[in-house]
Image (cartoon, rainbow, N blue to C red; front, side, top):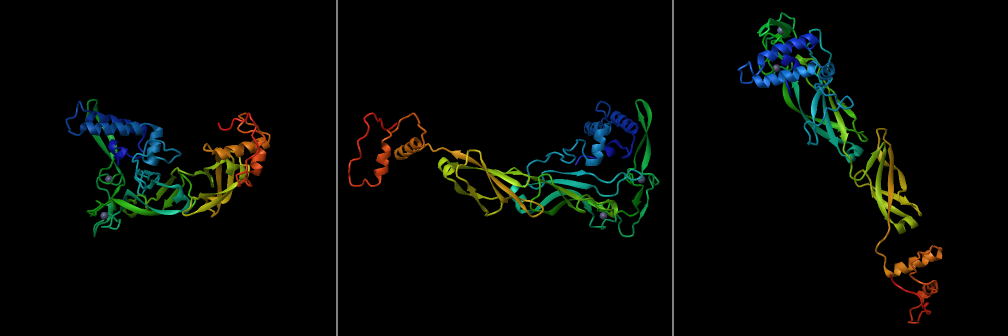
Length: 388
Ligand SMILES: [Zn+2]
Ligand SMILES: [Zn+2]
């Protein structure tokens, strides 16, 4: 994770715009690659620039305070897929958090956001997923107290409880006074007399966390689920933040979700469309087969709905399954089928203008079934052209 911008500039969280500018100018002069010989000067100079570009912009600073990033998250939340790829932890980031305390120090753990992508089928059935992320967790060694045995919380000797110290820097423009967050207590004004060696008195250490998240059936895309206490641990045993899991439901290959309804497409033949048919459509739940009654005379693009076969919702009901019917016109008619269809078409008074067979063929067809004895059918009209 990037370093804390306030720390980079050495200012308190509630520093004024002027203080921030002053601190930046001081750091920039000190670290400018043309001036400084320190091997990491260039990198730190970049860091200072980045910190200043965020903290000097009122909007970006507000976002940073709230979300831990300068960019406005989409819908106030989405911090972008900076980690891309993985199914479980696509990204994790801080957001929210308590207001700065009296001295600008925050002792409550911040809430953390993590995005979890699931399939539409998982969203329909509900599922249980493990998310993995890094967080500041309660130190096991001191159980969050921050103190080694016999240690206690005392007023910070460096800042005498103020949380800030004043530094005087010699710069090319002369002496400059800067107030910075106290390096010993990090602005809190209190330290532990005998700090825990594991967490250096913080009561929390960074660690990798795996949390099982129960996702209810019918979860919506973008819905947030809260896992209490699984955000950042608080300073020295103070209240921990929550883990907020934003569920992202992936597009499905077969179904499109519209509210509680599921839409899909199926192809039927022109004959099935004319006569009506019953389709078996695989539903969204495992091993679910939905019978879809397609009425006779269905037109291309018609939608047939089956209530109760759509997406389950939080109220335990299900929406509709809506099947949009595509009609396939056969291209592989046999000679016999062509003749029969042509005859039907003529009977309906719908000539094709192609003249496959003469009108007297009706008689021939009507008698065709009985004609198994080799008896010659009635004479054809001389102008009949036959096939093609
Ligand atoms: Zn500890
Ligand atoms: Zn201090």
